[in-house]
Amino acid sequence: MKRQWIKFALVTVLYLLFLLWVKSWWGLIVVPFIYDIYISKKIKWTWWKKSKSTTVRTVMSWVDAIVFALVAVYFVNIYAFQNYAIPSSSLEKSLLVGDYLFVSKLSYGPRVPQTPLSMPLTQHTLPVFNCKSYIEWPQWDYRRVKGFGHVKLNDIVVFNYPSGDTVALNMQNTDFYSLCYQIGELTCQQSNITLPNLDSISRTQQQEVYGFLYHLGREAIANDPAYYGDVVARPVDRRENYVKRCVGLPGQTLQIKDHIVYLDGQPNKEPDEVQYVYHVETTQPIPMELRHELGISEEDAADPYLRNTSYTLPLTQKAYNALKANTRLVKSINYVQPGQGDWLYPLNMHKDWTADNYGPVWIPKKGESIRLTADNYLIYERPIRVYEGNDFEVRDGKFYINGQQTDSYTFKMDYYWMMGDNRHNSADSRYWGFVPEDHIVGKPIVVWLSLDKDRDWFDGKIRWNRLFKMVDNIK
Image (cartoon, rainbow, N blue to C red; front, side):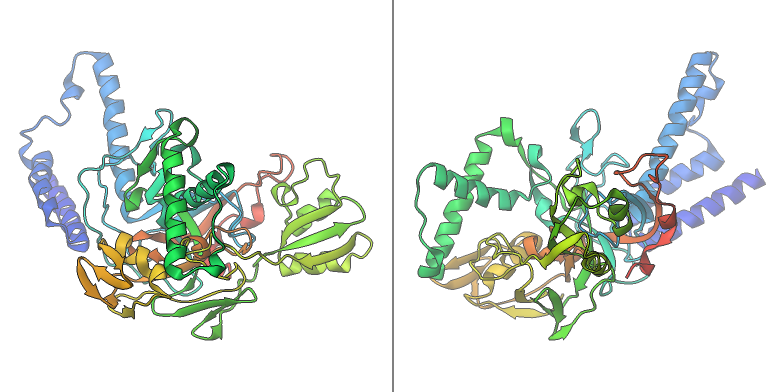
């Protein structure tokens, strides 16, 4: 009995320390059950062990093990760390497609789950059943418990995709809001609806055009669920996980000039493995051995048959120098300038920005205010309205927040600017804006496995040189 009291005391102390850390005293209702498990034993927790049926004992032993494992995984996944696989090339060549990461929730402090009733090891969809892996009720307010630190400049960060609040299920990899505008524009072309030249009309008229395109596109998507799928909304912590590099911190003014990121007027150091797109003309197809050496994937080359002599490739400075020096193979190599993009953030603001020349934008900081003007309110409308839950309106050139006329707003959260190292092939903050602090998931710590999808198991599929590589060493 003395041993049981020692076990009870140890487990209870650890559990109370956990509750103290997460500041959730609702958990005290579990303490009587811990007492019963170790001391009073009124509830027959392991009744099946005394069953005369071998089948019952076998089945229930498996159920007991599975339930324990799911509960353990649930808490580890929420409060300690989770596994994450790099799905796209947006961070290449710093992180590669096929890298598997341990993501620390403790680095920035784990979030108390906003959608607590969910299946472990799933983000938003149950495999096989293809249905939601979570129950939307209850929804808890955002709260983050104390961690080891905060997001720092140039950290690689895992976060929930901000624009993933609304999704067309058959096109989950496409930003829903960009899709609405593009479908609206396509519908106008197909219906011979002539849109005015945005350069020749007022800002108010421009907004009317963008509003028309958005609602036209959204209506078209809603009317064709067989093609686009149902349109669903997702809670913050159930949105898709993304991984990018933080290149702008709260309170900084960010501007991109000739592809270099400037913060408060000073250039930020580019990642060592940053990539930009080049047009490469060759005398013959680039040999596979050279492609492997330079890290040019089949997806990059877009040439599975190796017959091309004209490529549009994302290249690091090292790969660019190697190709430039290979005059027998390479006839010309030229930087590809991104075109002026109507679908850069904010999507409904007409601007002459490009992916290489963007801004300036001030990144919102908790407790600091922004003066709202006709030139900047579209940049901050989504954080004010969507992320911080306010009613935001513009009437007769005046701003109304929660029904009150105002010309300023004080932010309740910190925000970050995230970009991929594969700068011309990355859907990042240039396209969907700020990442609020309540979307931050954690910090990748180590690459524990790396698989090259372009190679076979006996031809270098496992990238041995990347195993157990610390992400902090990837600059």
